[in-house]
Length: 139
Image 1: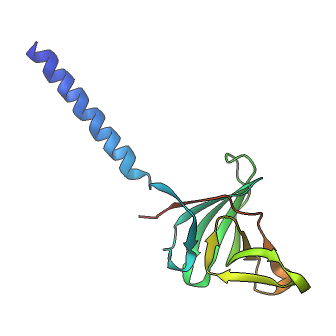
Image 2 (image 1 turned 135 degrees about the vertical axis):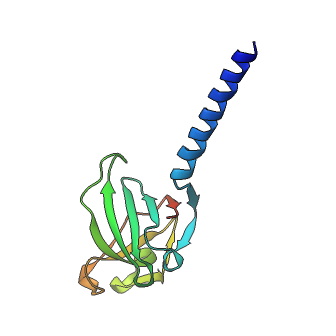
Image 3 (image 1 turned 90 degrees about the vertical axis):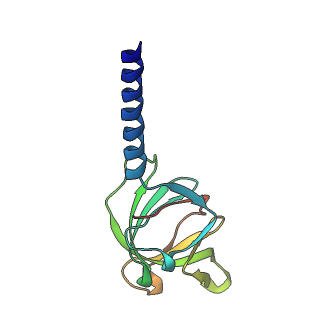
């Protein structure tokens, strides 16, 4: 009987140690309504969910708003990475082709304005409306 209890205790300890190691190795994901990307650290991971795609972002130079983005339609296979300049939350183009941007912010219920290689208007694009933001802090 004592031998069985000892074996059980050792198995339980091994299981708990394995669970702790597994949980500690994965950064926790949390959903947020908005985020100031200038305050993030390099290598922070974000997932932006729109109606038709998931945008996986890795922040590379937060002070400049630079990130690597990969797109996915199904959340499993992602396209090639491409560097973008994150500009901020927007409702899109307003009257007269103006786009009002809340700089440095990603917000649910709004689009995200991105710059492809520079900040010229011809190199800017908008995501679809963002429905959910998940953040995974780099440790």
